Image (cartoon, rainbow, N blue to C red; front, side, top):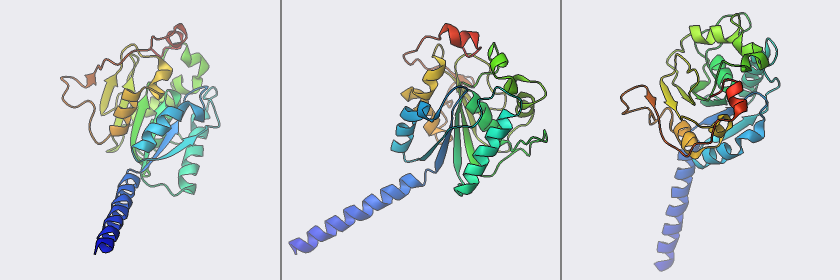
Length: 237
């Protein structure tokens, strides 16, 4: 009887473990999109934190840096091809800086024909991490700042029932975000590695990190990384 009882306990433990893994897998896929001059390795910390939360993580190295007209479309086509080839259907896009703008561009189904359908079925939510549009950065990344291309399109097309959270420093927020959370004084690149920022990113769109605040903008107080002169020059903070 003792042996039978032990076998029952072991079997129950295996079943429980299987159910746990199944639950974690149900969290879906997340694709990280790096910013200008970034790379896949920029997401090492975030990748570990997301995987611990149960997500299947995909880290891409984008083919274009965003310094030439049309780079956003090239990157968008690259990500769409990756999603299609891997048959992904429930994707959370997490983009830092230039990658955050690309994430919105993708989610709106925008194309080189200067039109946006308003949605892109495989994407279920978007997280923007300190995606800024101003300052000297417009000289470095003209594809984002040209009035005739990307920024005009993604600012004028509101997403169709797509949750978007914009986590950022003090620079310009995305006008159609459902939630804008400000980490005042935090360095631009720290948004890819700070554990509090990533926790907010992982929670979205489950627990709204902006809920319970008197305005759409919450200002938490993590240990800040000072904004460098280089980030300020680029209009990032």
